[in-house]
Length: 94
Image (tube, rainbow, N blue to C red; front, side, top):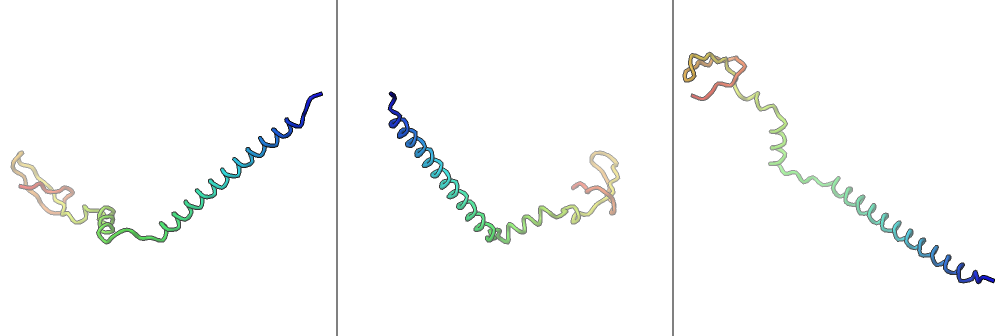
């Protein structure tokens, strides 16, 4: 006759180890999720941009070509040209 008491005891120990592992993994996942949620709530309420960085963002977002006068350029040679206002090009420096 086979003694099944030892086999049942081993099976119960194995099930208990698996349950403990699952429980600890669940606790670890819950701790990670709580940490992420806490950090997200802290970052949502903070405004870390300084006035200088806000000015930089606005300068990058704006159309910078609006401040530059546009010219019509009439080229006479590679070293001589004439710029007249209201064109669509930027006049090269002399």
